[in-house]
Length: 244
Image (tube, rainbow, N blue to C red):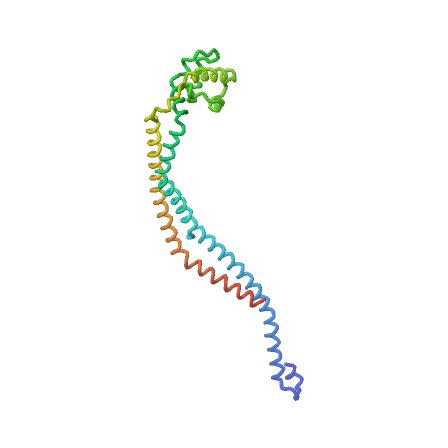
């Protein structure tokens, strides 16, 4: 316009028009760069949040962590089941090692507290002791006694004295075989442990299969959106790096 109005012949008016157009685009480019920078930062933040959410959901639903944990627990149960024969052998050996103690306890078990002539032992106190499983001389133990509320030390001393007087008459017979009832108790405990382990193994195996199916389904569902979120975040990082 300057060229046209001034009619300067030395410079063609088209050059002034071109200069104006160039200035316009240069100015616009500066403002567009600032707008692009803000937009890229916003997109990077959105991409980061989207990726973190996708990653967290993948870990929660599609990772193998829960499967591995349950599998390890199943292996522990299987090991315990396979060690039952050894456990049975150890407990039978303990019967041999505790032969004297078992004989003595069986002897003491034949004397009921209800029949003891102890002044401090009232009917109410005897009923209280019985409710805590203390019924014979074999049951008299300081720890078990202290677990019963409201009993005096005087009664404990009287019961211990009574048990000691009975124990003096005990005669150990090392030639006697292990009591069949003790052996039967070990066998019963082992069978009970075996049943419990078997049930827990079956339940654990079913749970492991269920977890595996859930993980496989989650991976099929989440794989595409998770990969898309990662690609989107990676591209946003590249764009931000180029701009900087």
